[in-house]
Image (tube, rainbow, N blue to C red; front, side, top):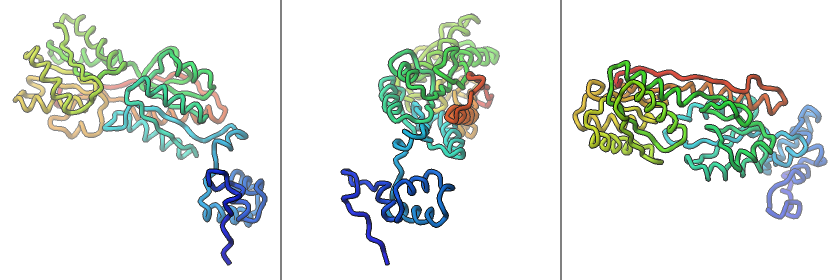
Length: 342
């Protein structure tokens, strides 16, 4: 005989199924139902099966935030990334998610769109939900968001950058050093008339500054620069190269702040009949999977994205479980992958 579903009177005013409803349907006390779901080894197999059957029939989802009040563990990790569209961060996020999932944690993802205001709003919402850890892309500058994170006591790992003063833990690399190394790479190839195509963000700013400083130190002319603002599209890359060539038609090498912008630069160069790399060398950033299969294949700066995600997950899991992390700052470095475009 089918047991009746719990009456609406036993539910909260929102109409949500509660643990009390599950316990009633299973014919056990609420505390027994709680034990069956949270510490199943403390109840008999018969009771466990009854409770799990009631959960299945009602569609009950445990309130992890309420449970966290007693256990101080949500088993939830929150991550804030600038973008997930054709993003250089995707491999990091995928590895972060996989490593967390294998350890019994869930990932909650927020997208800031490279906006400091939006990032601060996301962090305020995240802190209020008390996750076991927070993953940040980049370094959080002084301000309300950083102050609240420090006050929250939640383990934080900043990534994709380096600083001697992280909030908590840090896994990254030097953007300034990337700018210097790419400039040296192009100079060693004989290029002297350099240009930059970059989007508007603080990390790209530092790569660009170091690139220009290194070029100047080696006697190059002033580096021509095209800033595409918040846009990071193939079209933006094409338009940026058009602006550069209008100003300096003899430009012989371009460093782009993303592989997608570099693809746009190469597309425009081909449309103008410019041979790559003989007339125009192009270097991207991120070494996303498709660039090796382009024609010509794109020279790009490779970041060990998967290693960042895996180490960040391990750091956050360790701290969530009360273990220390040493060292708290890890430099994963980078490499320039030389291909046909430069």
